[in-house]
Structures are given as structure tokens and as C-alpha cells.
Image (cartoon, rainbow, N blue to C red; front, side, top):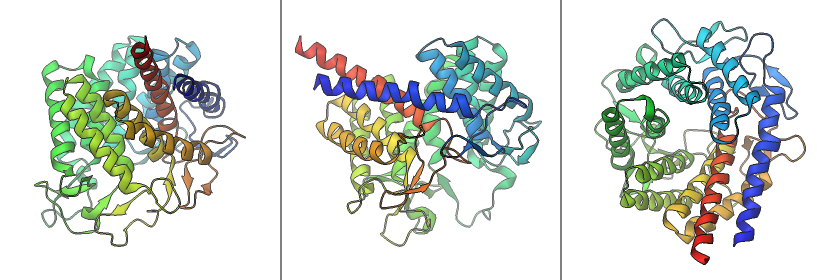
Length: 397
């Protein structure tokens, strides 16, 4: 198995460092106004110049992380800093809320209705502070984190379209992201706040949104944590659940809680079995837990981030527990992902396939896909595979 592991390690490392990262370095820099272009066609040509806060901040995080974890490459750090300086000036309103979208020059385009703009900003500036030691970046990260906690009970605020009181529901996405974000900011926050946030995130993900009778994680539950029989209440997003489970595994490792890790592995295996398309292979985007027609017309598409996060999840499950099912699933999802999403001709990965696995859009980036899931996933897989190899080498000595 050692040679197999080495082949995988080389594949993920080289695709990250020799393909994906050069693609974004070459094509996404806005030399005139700063920040990044994320709407890139298959060849890397810019087809739209709007700037989306999620993707700007995710790209800042990505290049800062690579500088911190892979190599102290000045080109990477400079790339991250110029993006951060653009967003520092243009990205927030007077209350510190991060806009959803800006024009190319930085004029606000879409109001700060999404708390996830704040989440990715906090991640980005924390990682950049680690790289630079610039205390202004640390302050932005911490202030934004506290703003997230302040808004989490009504994250959309005045932009919430729901009529108050009729069907109060809570969504899975925010506690899921907080379970990872708190580790990103751990060294910048009060230890008691870190501990409390970790425990709250674990409880929310594993005791509220995870439904034991279904063996699945729901995207929305009532304000009391109960199943709601409506479109929103029935929806399952397998990719979200699988991404969350590797966050929880890492938290379980941080908290020295092997039972939590084991539970997360078992849930992830169940979600993957449920979400796998038995007819065409790949993982479905959405399912209705009662097998009713899903609300989302894109329910049967195959998305890049779902498959990337699943590979990370399965590798971490195998690394932490040695469960052979995780390794078998990793190889299955790996084979599908690399044969369908990776573009050997022009670089980077396609984002959207139809159910049969045919490319729906040739774009490498847009409003939702940018420089984040693919490079983060490649890095995670590379490093976890190295850890698995080291463990197995030790066992054979």
C-alpha cells in the first residue's frame, strides 16, 4: 500500500502546486484595482468583473494558508495581502458587516445579507495575521468573529424574508462553519470562548441537526430542533454533512474525544451511502428525506466541492479510526472526481456536472466557485495521506 499512498500524495501535491495555484496566480489578479477576479472561463479568461466577498476572502485565506503551511513564498503572501487591503477598504459597512458583492472598483453592489461573508473574512484575516504579524489583520478577524456571534440568532437581520413567528427554523450552515472557524481563530480568542464555541458547535451539529432516526443531517430544523415537514425541513445536502463531519473529527481530535470521532465517521459513512447516485455514480447535490420531489431543480447535479470535501472526510475518517470502509469510499470518490472534474487540458477543476457526469459549465470560477474548495481539499488530502503513510511505515518497522 506504500507505493499506492506515495502515488496519491504526489498526485494531490502536484495538482495543487503545479496546476491549481498557478491557474489562480496567473488569471485572477486585478492589477488595476486590487482584489481578485473569480469569474474565469475554462481557459482562465475573465468573463465578469464583479467581486464577491465570500470568494475574495476565501482566496486571501488560501494563499495565506499556503504561505503558513507549505512554503514561505513571497509571491503567495503578496497576493494575499493585496486582496486583503482591497477588502479592508471596500468590504464592510460602517457597522463592520461584510457586503455580499462589490463592483470591480469596490463599490457596494449587494447588501451584507449573508453572515458567511463575515465568516470567510474572519478566517482570511486570522490566517493572514499568522503570516504577517500585522495586528490590524488580527483585530479585523476578532471583531468580525464577535460580530458573527452577535448576529447568529438572526443572521440575516433586516434582510430576513421570513414572516416572524409562523414557522421559526434554524439552519445548519452556520453552526457547521463555526465548528471550523473557531479552530482558525483559536490563538486570537479567549480560551474560554474557544471552549464554549467548540462545545456549542458540536452540540448543534451532532445533537440538533443530526437526526438519529434518519441517520442523516438535516439542513433546517425548527427553532426547538425538531423535524419540520416542509420543503426546507425535508432537504438533505450530503456535501454539507460530509464537510461538517471532517470538521467534527478534527474537533474530536482537539478535544481528545475518540467517541465523537467515531460517531462522526459513522454518520459520514451513512450520509455518503445515502447521497451516492447508484445509477450514474457521484454524489447528488440535494435529496428530500421523504423522497418527495426536491425543491431545488439542481438536485441531481454533481458539484466539485461536494466531492472534494467527501475525499477529505473519508481520508480523515481512515486516518483517525483505520475504518477500511473510509479508505474504500475514498478510492471510489477519488476515481470519480479525478476522471470528471479535473481539467487536464487547461488546468483547475470544473465545478458543475449533470447527473450523467457531463460538464454543465466549462467555467473554472464564478459567483460561488473560486480559489477555495479545490486547493484546500488538495492540501488536506495531501497532508492526511502523508500522515497515513507515516503511521503505516511505523507499523511495519
